[in-house]
Length: 137
Image (tube, rainbow, N blue to C red; front, side, top):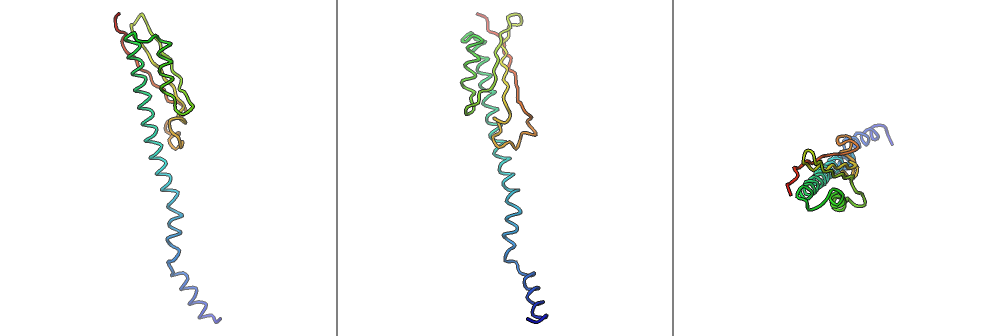
């Protein structure tokens, strides 16, 4: 093979775009998967957090209306708040002095966000407290 012919083949190879789609695909797939996982993590975390808040509010309402005592209210909440095999920490207290019911929930953020993409934003634990007035008997 002569030098001009080799040069022609090399320049033809460098101008060719036959493998550009493969290179672009391999560069963009990790970005696309990251965005997809972020969206799935965020929507799952938001849905689970919303459900936990709703169940906490429902527990506080039941205890404040004397349908359940504090221990039964905590059991009620724990059984309904299970995420797979994980059960969040639930504490229900009745303060007779201030006539309030307090439901405190603490959940591991890794259980809320399944892919763990949001863990740097969420932290290790998510906690929230619901306080409701105790209804008179």
